[in-house]
Image 1 (cartoon, helix red, strand yellow):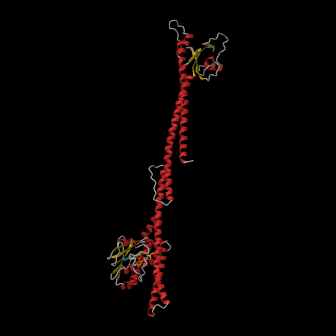
Image 2 (image 1 turned 180 degrees about the vertical axis):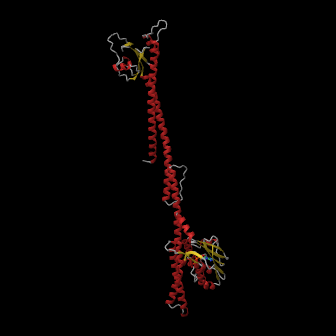
Length: 496
Ligand SMILES: Nc1ncnc2c1ncn2[C@@H]1O[C@H](COP(=O)(O)OP(=O)(O)OP(=O)(O)O)[C@@H](O)[C@H]1O
Ligand SMILES: [Mg+2]
């Protein structure tokens, strides 16, 4: 069954049940009230008649007696309400309207009833008309009271029956039933209309969710559902929106990764093709004796260089991948950075001189640092090699010092070489990025992996690296190696 009909059914069942219960309750209550009122009214007639009958004449001191005429007159006055009277004497013999002449003193009223009356109880009854006890009931169902009269000395004087035809109550109740039925019908129609609107509104909200879900299934993660309230469906919509947002974020990340993968494949193939093509060309030259004898040695040297370059490329790639995927374990320890820094300067001095650069170190002889020894050298060598590579006839200075708070050692590698634009600076940490892709390979490599490895290593160390550069003015790389205590605190904070 469609949801809208289920909703409507649910609403209708609730509304119709409520209406039925209320209608029946009102009807019952009104009916009881009507009988109650009639009984009270009839009892009122009886009381007044009793007062009239038992009032003694002040002059004679005799009690007034109610005559047949009184009853006839009263019945005529109350003809509209179809009131009838019946009187019994203190022996239970009918004295009005048909006086019983027999003297057998057998009460006309049932024994049980008579006992109850003698005890002073007032009988309130309604009968269906089949009760044949009183000849007055023969035709119509009646509502009646039977009330005993007592004199001042509490002696039973007489018993009065006052009855009214039920038909008057019935007429009123029928009108009431008709009105209630009409109200019930009108309310049900209104309830159907209202439930349709309500159900339709709810179903539309669900349909909106359904459409949005379909869009997500078709790959549109930008879809958002409008929500205004805070019921369960709005909560669902909010969760849905959150879901699509994270799906969208993952999608962007997946696309970014895919883009990087494609770039990596293109770059890696490109980087490998150049040395392979060179080696292949030279090998073919050698095979077909196309290379003159005097150039052979040089060709072999070239092939060796290109092979080394290939090996380095593969190694660097593997290294980068290992660092990136946390496959290498760093052995971070405290040592004096002065020694490895001097070693690097000595090691790279020749290269610097070849490029006409002056390479110098400014650092105290005691420079405590907390890092992985070998990886620290790798980082410094990579950056210094770059500085030499991109500086011609310039100055390259490596400075090492403790920071002002004495919480870290800062190493800065500064050159006054070609420098970079802001956009180039932004990309240097990317794998295979070269600010100037047209640069031909040099003996130092240039595959665009050096800084990517440095960046990964610094991240693994939980240390910082920043770069400042100006085109044609120079570049400074600043490395902050935090002390062991600072890093331990950082990791515990992160874990908690
Ligand atoms: N000191 C510097 N001055 C100017 N540009 C620099 C400097 N250091 C790095 N760069 C730029 O950043 C790019 C990336 O450097 P990176 O060390 O990652 O690669 P590479 O030196 O080209 O190759 P590799 O280091 O893998 O042999 C360089 O190609 C260069 O354009
Ligand atoms: Mg480099």
